[in-house]
Length: 298
Figure (cartoon, rainbow, N blue to C red):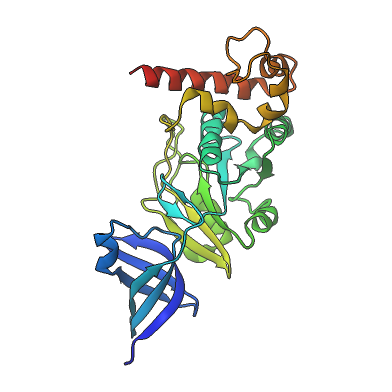
C-alpha cells in the first residue's frame, strides 16, 4: 500500500512506547514516535495533536511525524492541550475532604487550567450539605455541578460543561470518576472499584492516562487517583494568587505583598472573619502556606 502522510490526530493513550492516535478519519492508529523526538528529548503526551504517516490500514498502524504546538500541559498527570478540569469529589461515602479539594484547585490555578467542581453521589447527601458546598465554591468563583453517576442524575449538565472541550477529571479515588466516565461513554468500559469498607477510601482503578472521545471535538480524560497533594513547586508568597476570591480584598491590606497571615491590617483576614470569604477556604490557605514555608526551610 502507499503510505498516507500528513494525517492529523490526537494521542489518546500511550503504553510501553506505543501511542494510540485518534485520527481525523475516525480511526485509531497504533503508532511509534520517530527517533527525532528522542534525540531532541521531546516525549509525546496524551492529548498531543500530531501528524502521522499511516503505514498499514489493517490493523491501523503509523508513525508520529510531528507534534503540533501545545496549548499547555499538566505535569501530573502528564497530558497536553487540556482546556479545562473537572475536579470530582463525592458529597458522601466518603464525605469531601475540603483541604484536599482546595489543593486540587490550587494545582489547577497554578497550571492555568480553568476548573469546575463536580460533587458526585448527590443522592446520598442532604440538601443542606449540597447548599453549603455550593455556597463556598461559587463564592470563590468556581462553577459547581452536582450529579449521581450511579443514578444518572445531573448528567445533562455535565455533558453541557464538557461539550467541545478536552477536560481532565481530577480527584481522589473512590469518588466516582470512572463511574462518571462509564455513564457518559459506556464503551469506555472502565474498571470501577468499590470503596474500601475499612478505610472509606477508593481503591486505585485507573492505571494510566487515557482520553476518551465522548463525541467529535469533546474529549474526557480520567486520571490515576491520588489521595494527597503535598508538594507544589511554588514559593509561599505565590499561594494567595491561586485563591481567586482573595483578589477583591487585597486593596484593604496595609502592606503591598501582604501574605494574609500575621499582618495586623489585612483585608483578606477581615473578610474571612466576617464570613465574606469562606472560613474553610481561608483555613486551608493558612495550612498550605505553612506547609510551603516549612518545605522551604528544609
